Length: 134
Image (cartoon, rainbow, N blue to C red; front, side, top):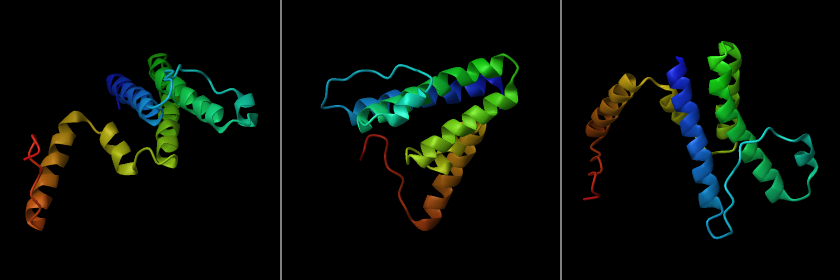
């Protein structure tokens, strides 16, 4: 995975964090997630909402920091951080392992996967959805 792909993947996670937080709290006073390193004190807070906010803030921090780590030449560390981010997303049920693989996949391979999916659907007799819902 090259530096540009790491930036793209981390940016997609950062956007996903914001989107999921906004959807989860849509009926409430919305306060955006600010990227922040996890505060060990947060694990001692009695409020589950505050703990959850601290977790999402740390996920955002990791998503923003990982490309900087990669750019500084610490590629293995950046890959560990990205793997941790993806593992937490999977552990929280926010994405499947297949989702993470697709997110990491080079763009030229995604087209191949899409064509294989359409072929498999054809073999199984499943009609792909029309883009405008018809």
